Length: 97
Ligand SMILES: [Mg+2]
Image 1 (cartoon, rainbow, N blue to C red):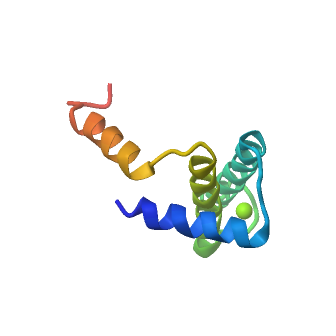
Image 2 (cartoon, rainbow, N blue to C red):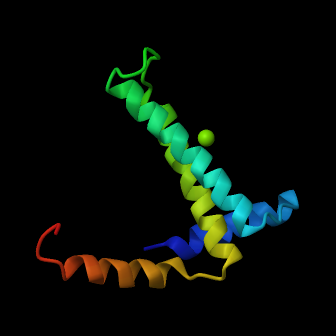
């Protein structure tokens, strides 16, 4: 997976913006973005009266992805390596249980 390119893009962007957020702040923002994803999903299920817009849900998912990449950068985590390890674990499962 091309996470290295995405991590580099986020690293360069944050550097250009002068942002050096600590990991705990990033995690708080991730929780906020997950709430926005939940709100959009509830709209789709008509739980909320607001109109569901697929592009808005996509943007919220990307907000969370950006913060995930940023957190990985903060912790010097190689997401390509972690993704491969995770997926090997998933593929070795025989069922959801
Ligand atoms: Mg957002």
